[in-house]
Length: 382
Ligand code: PLP
Image (tube, rainbow, N blue to C red; front, side, top):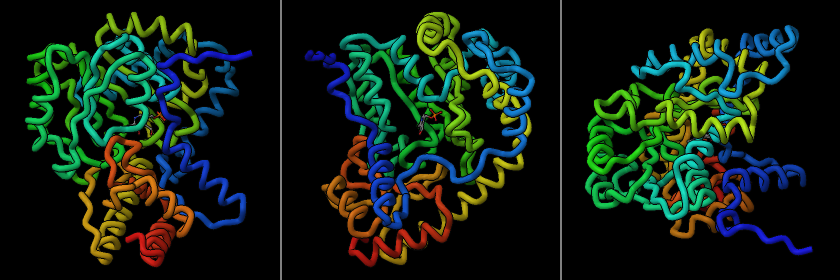
């Protein structure tokens, strides 16, 4: 039997980050000591009180289906969290999902049809492109690599890129893969264009809690943006809960109604006891989050200093736990060589739409970061 797959799917590449991690695991299984700087997950355990809350919820029998949009107590806790960020939502404007990735998938499936135009700010997280293609949409890309990955100096390029045909713009600040946090002036520029051309904007704020001395503004708080912004967030990064699969999106109720159909017919709901643990994560983890962010901050400085010693200048990130290392034009070959020769795993910038760079994740111990950079230098990769 020959199966025929849709063009929408066959034109999508498998996740580059997951592919590199798989290669790293393969080498490790063959006995190599790989310094894995490719991973997009905090190397901290989930805070113990969150684990306990999940366990208690299981013991209390919270193991059945829940309301599709998520248990009301969690949605109320999310409403409070969003209010702290200046965003006003009701529980009817929130869907709890198994991860922010699923939230993004549902929004894009709900809004984008064949030939609809979606604008991305490059480098952009790998799955945006794939999700838009899977929905049948077309991409318009704005390159931020010439402005140290900042949006404000590239507003003219964004102005040229968008039009009345643009359906959706995706903004991710702090950014994966650059760690850039966009200035208020940049976000105001986005707002002006969104209002002028009637564009819906996804604000992916999954790294909002992980910043170094800056306070990112939530796009939906800007005048004129409340009814055209869909805010996405999740528990994976701030609370070190990648494997728990918990996220959410908040937006206008009409979107929630439409996306809610997709949600209920595909995932039913996020896992019941995980949702209970999510309440604990939102309400009682301030100290754990601060400690983690402090550790990332120190590592960020360490990596920037070590790279400087090798005469490599990077755009210093203000958030998340990534930075872009300038490498050869053929970043794919550079990354393959780095993992084969130096046993250091990184992700090629071309996977994010920006060739000539490799993404380094500093969600690794200081010792491993030092080891990784030393190996890259010894093998001639710096
Ligand atoms: N958005 C961005 C920018 C990410 O980097 C990630 C994960 O790496 C996600 C969304 C999805 O996160 P999750 O599905 O683990 O909540």
